[in-house]
Image (cartoon, rainbow, N blue to C red; front, side, top):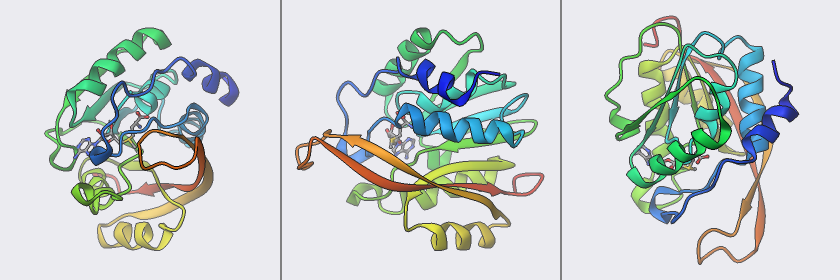
Length: 211
Ligand SMILES: C[S@@+](CC[C@H](N)C(=O)[O-])C[C@H]1O[C@@H](n2cnc3c(N)ncnc32)[C@H](O)[C@@H]1O
């Protein structure tokens, strides 16, 4: 198994969004955060041999990280076709041997019924834009429906919300870890060249059948 820092390095070639859309909160998950999330998930036994679904896969960063850890299959879902093209090109750059099924679909009404143990990984929109209010809640609802476990990136102050949502939907937050998210200037309203965002990653166990 590659180390976490090797994984970070491998993901360094993943290109960002060509023309990021603010309404869909399109910014690339940083390679070190993606490597951290997938490495931790792998240590928990949630990647190797599992079906891994990346909801809101964008550039493919999390899906591609998972391909480097021996999954059974990987699916990436995004509502926007353009980043899926970028994700395909990124798959060639990363050079992983296991492929990814890239699916153009709304992750909140996802047409998937994965068989076998399934792990969702996601950096959903935080719901900061009007068009996307409660997006992270809707993405978690999808995870509750299709996954045995999920790993999701949220704003740093989301613990109460994620714990309550999980409990209301038959799940339980088993792990949480804080991380920093370096956000380069992406949209016109960003005032700084770079911003450090404090985020938290939650592992939710949704129970054996994902219900
Ligand atoms: C914060 S970005 C994360 C991207 C990805 N992890 C990456 O590193 O490129 C959120 C992603 O969710 C996608 N998205 C937003 N709303 C969606 C929806 N309803 N269904 C599917 N994807 C959606 C956006 O297009 C964007 O690619």
